[in-house]
Length: 359
Image (cartoon, rainbow, N blue to C red; front, top):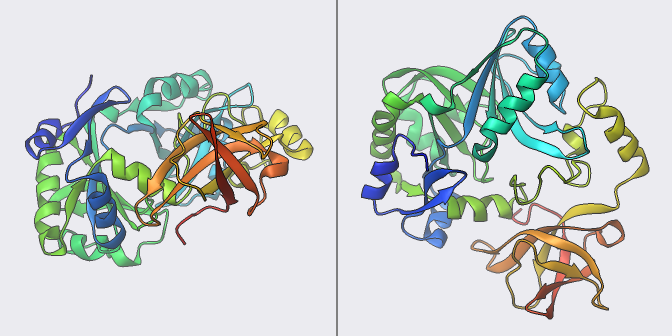
């Protein structure tokens, strides 16, 4: 198992550590519900240094990204971030990722930890453009400072005006006395906040500065357990659960980042699929009867016929009810439709809901 720069520090803080995507990661500190509430109402910090980062450089970097990305990178300007996925050749998804435009010839791609090697090989396979590629994952630390008090808590550490940063933008500058730090406003919690990219050698210094600055705001370290409950309340997909190599991006609701104004991997087949429509759709649902839906549980109709499967599920700390995501036959996908989750051979009633669950 791989460690992040701060693994020992998390252990010293009393974190419960678990293997995740090949890394030894903190899943919780004070408890998932407490950490979830901290992010929703205050400010918390996730160490997500397991994520992957690639630098793509060169005159034709944009051409390579246009080829492998579902989204239209030509719409980016310096300091802007874009969400997209890497389509495979069989109608599925290699990974979902972020593209940061640093300048006309330099892009940062941020990928999921479990897919670093796979994504690198996939992008390299299409690099007939002579683009210089560098994997900086092992030398980069990433902290997600999330919550409504994040801007106020961090402002004393930088001259960058944090509160005025637009969603899905980034700035490179000085932070906590460290130069060349990337500060972005993307987030995976729906609570607002920032991501801080720093070199491993500066990770402890920056982490300590964040906690000193946030002390009066009740800042806490947050583990992957609360990250999952927070993203699920927003209906955000998790690669490996809700999307993977076999799932259709159009069925997953990723049509909004699928731009047919250009040619990209498998674009012709995806275009035909869009015109035809998908047999299933990824939907959100709320449990009406008691029971917690889990990944892999069958979704059935009133007669007990299988109409889909659960991809993610949890007890929502904010809503105090069970929620989930799952693929179901398209005719059942309308909000308000009654469905049932098969839990220990019992039909447990649920209702299709439009995400985000937390408005």
